[in-house]
Image (cartoon, rainbow, N blue to C red; front, side, top):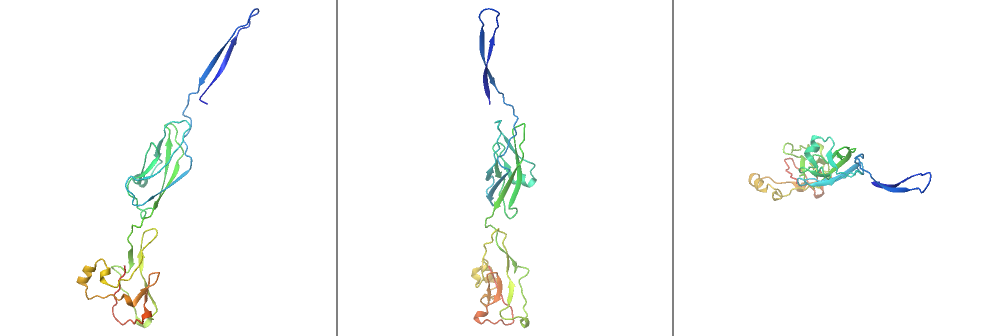
Amino acid sequence: MKNFSFNVTAMDHPNNGQQFKTIATVFVNIIDQNDNVPKFPQATYEFSIYENNAPHSYIGQVTAFDIDGPLLTYIFDNPSNEISSSFYLSSSDGKIYAHNSLDREQSDEYIFYIIASDGYHISSSVRIQIKILDLNDEIPRFVFPNDNNDTLIIDRVYWNMNDYICQIEIQDNDEKPTHTLLFIYRFDQLKNYDYLNKHKNILQFDSEKFFLDHQNRLFLNSTNGTILNEGVYDLAFK
């Protein structure tokens, strides 16, 4: 209630004669005091943004309410250095932005807290959870074979034609790896074809003697009657 009114009546009480009275109307305006604490309508806000975003990308907004009606100011509640360097907050409207491009492979989630103030009272803190969504931006890398470990020695005395040879290991740091492993049959299937053709023109790939299963395991391709003779066999993958 912001205002109300009532009537006041005054009258006399003569011993003799006519009684007189008068009526006055009193108007009362209630002057507001800033006595209410700002409140958020929910305890947690969840937002998401794709990695590799442009700097200063908008992420989301939080809004508190104060029945006293003054303007509110939004601030981080004791943020870590990582949060302060990754995000910033519009103090006037609670909008959250990313300082720079975010990388899911460095961190896939951020959690911090925001409070609202009306200049006299401070709200309870609200929890902010930001999930970084993955993009296919990581190049698959060979764990085995690699530049320092690319040789297998097989003793044919203990090795049968259909034996499993080795596991080709690949590292893909994307959340959902999408790589496909393929054999190389010709030099021109490689990016460094010109270099290899010039410096290793004697080298021949022996991929047709082997095959990969769906788990990237290497086997001898015994279905075509392949026989491995003693010597060196060169394979390449991409």
